[in-house]
Length: 236
Image (cartoon, rainbow, N blue to C red; front, side):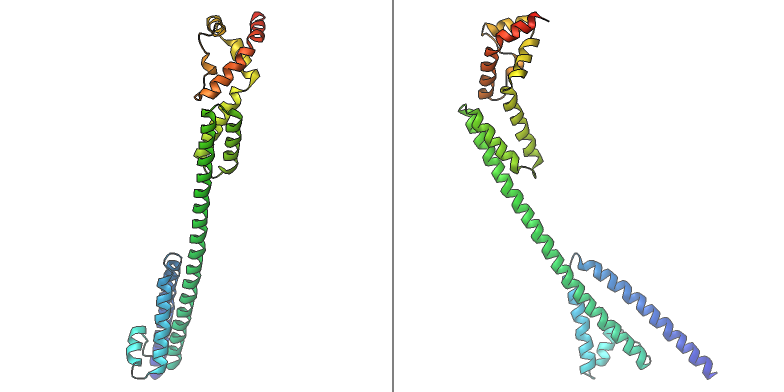
């Protein structure tokens, strides 16, 4: 009869210990997951657990209270020691994971701030180059504007919207000075539009750009290509 009682008690202790490990492992796992987002939580819980162990070892008067907080079972000394060891290990693990989480968050925040700072710096530089290009176009300095746009293009890799704007303006700058493209436009013009352009009373639609300096540049080049365009049109 006594042997059966001992076996039943051992089975109960084993089951209780197994349940303890499962509950503790699940709790620690969830808290470790929290350490990636709120590292102060595992650090705080780890410190509380270590403090509870210190009070448990240092004060017999407070030990019953600490036993209730730690939910220490009424069991053999070896079982209680195993639970205290588990609590201590979990506390240390929580503190370490919280510290790692805080360090990781700090690095990520620093990297994000640096990236945002660089993006703002690049954006400011691109805006300044674009403004300079527009100012130069306004006074008819197409070559200077092109250089400013190339400077903007060189640093606009992280701003896709600005890059598209720069590329579009650069493309208009290049087309306004492309002799072959302008000759092709004149060659393909309807006869009436070609004659009105020769007379200086109209400008072909394909030679009109959003910027006056570019339109003037294209028209000046087109005037020099009238004779070549006339010969090509005659052979069509």
